[in-house]
Image 1 (cartoon, rainbow, N blue to C red):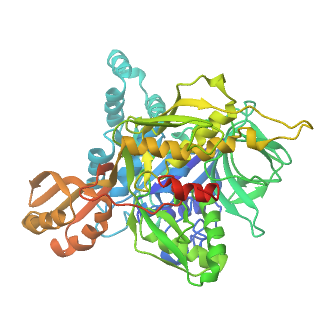
Image 2: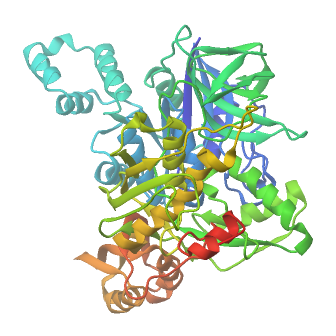
Image 3: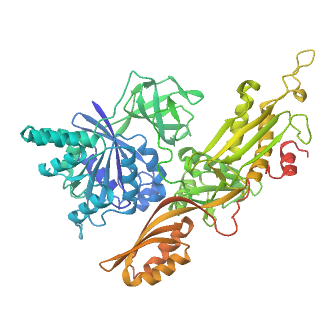
Length: 639
């Protein structure tokens, strides 16, 4: 059978999990529909998911649809858990994007559709909740074509004239052929042509119905089976797979959810993992609604593998595709503190385990203050972390006030060097570095102006790795983004031994010398170059009654927002602009009172902007290479 790894995505409360339940019920996987409100759905298994009626963790369940095995991945809809969606997108063959027939296109709907189209993932749209009062499928379809994709086409029934118009718009070759021989394009051929454009991510069929009543589900199932392409797989190719989820078995063993793009894996087989390898001790594959043990798994499938020491994002074998950077990074942070001071150690260990499952948690430990902070997308994540720590680890925690995560950009060019055997350098290494700004989005680029063979490669690698690690905290304590670091000087003492072959560390350079010296040289160069602190910004679209424009403008001014455009039409004012990420919660909180409850605001990450006024600082968690005396006391236990 063919395999289709299908994602169900939506803005929160559009009915995504209810649609998953209906698809499973129609396929005969469950005998009775679960309820989100009652906490009885198949894919929401966490206690907090059932209590709040939202999806927090992506869940996988399988069912057969004709000759296709569908691995259905139910993803979170709340924007606080966008990282979970991001990981799922890296393993999908197709997606169903769910909209509410009442609320229509919402903020998260736009974000998801933009990303799906950018990745070229085939998408079907399902307008749900036709049974609800206020449902207006015509209005929602117009919103879809205006705000999501101009290549939407209503299905069930399929209007052949609309299909012809759409195909002619998308493909000049089709238009030429159709004008020459229109009778050759029978309904089956038109559907085949549409199927090709859907698979290419260019055409987007739209279905209408209700997950609760079952209306429109048969047509959607037909679209899933016949319009979405099954995943390409090369079972005989080299091993390549992506870990998109990690959970722990009751005994503490890691279980990795892996999508295999090529090759196969068997129980007791050793598989390459980055620079090392791991041995698979058990395999489960998804069949008919549950995970069942299997001796092996091949390309195109999703499986649960035990025995591997992995994190989310790790690759098995060769790298193919992933999900890094699809959405904005988390822009908020909070300090997590144990209710009982004696739990500081267990809390750090528990948070480290959670970071294995979610790399964007961004764990950061301050040894001096004995504080651990985590990164956040929003306040709801605090509840999830708190509930998880209580339920799984028996730890009670509190949180500090949420703060903004800033970044630093290099302002100019700076250089520094310390030579081996010359004061005040106490290390057996020569390191010279030049630091300069890089292009936006380029990350940290490490270059050489010394000959690669002038010293052991392990020493060069030690400098490069230390540079990237050190730049996690710049002059003001924030991560330094987008810069070029060039190694300009190098030198070392060759390995020395005593007469009996005993290694003499006091006269021989080691990688440790380069790791210890690099932060001092790098930060000296960075201090000469200078950095500016940037805060995260959101782009906003705010709609409100035109007669409330005064109070709305005052609210935005107080929040340091910068409106770029203001358009008034039919009694409604629409403002677009930029706002500091830290202020979005404040505007959301006060907007109802400023607009008689009629105002709405959508926001999305829009990069960084230099901070106005005094630059905020963040306490350091390293040994502070900006202070030579303090640094050497930590590293050498002497000055």
